[in-house]
Length: 162
Figure (tube, helix red, strand yellow):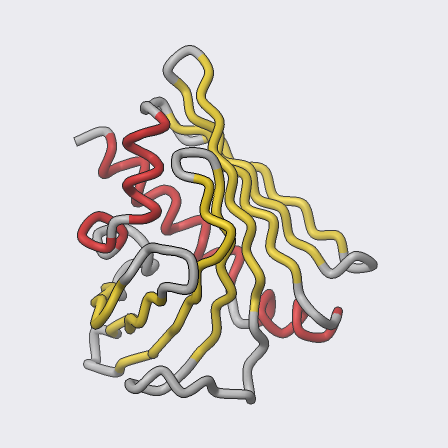
């Protein structure tokens, strides 16, 4: 099944909402978002790869990873998890950082709320990403977030169809 993606950019409320639907069980999709062994296979847009250094999916837990470019450049990222409601939703605050997880304040942080709903074998994932300032949202979009995340979701869909 082809992936259905809807993206809404609400600048006044500083939010991006992404709704994607996968022909797969909620359990499978939940694991794809929360298990780094699976997330590493689809998160970074090709030709980049995701490499997890540390991951602890629990309230207050962290995910420290980098996106590896074909030229060998490492783009480090960090996420901290909170408000985990297993198999239903979780929130995370992410940022660009260095290899030790020290946040790079030159780039905006994003607050994610991810919810998962299954109906008739199709799982809908809703990502609501909130920014502290409209300028931060614009900067992330100018950096190619929409294209990169869409590519990642398509890679997840391909992985599910293997």
